[in-house]
Length: 119
Image (cartoon, rainbow, N blue to C red; front, side, top):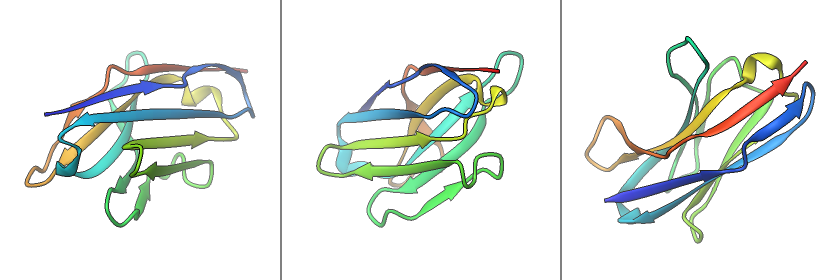
């Protein structure tokens, strides 16, 4: 089992920055990808970014490309999401999730952290 705990959310003005962290514990050697997802009120959960755990290669949603950066520290089993030039439409609960070796799904996921961007 892998357990995930996010931190770093909060309230920020438009144009500001926040960094989210997600610490993994348990069977971390089984992690293949780590991803960030978000869900705004009344909307479906959407993909934000992911990173291949071993190689560090990254993928981003078009809506955040150039503004958000995903990174990881394998020694700390932690993945980060640096968010810059934040917009009110970035307001959502942000979740990290792990795609384990042999799985096509992102499961487990963390409890989520609220990000609110004021205009």
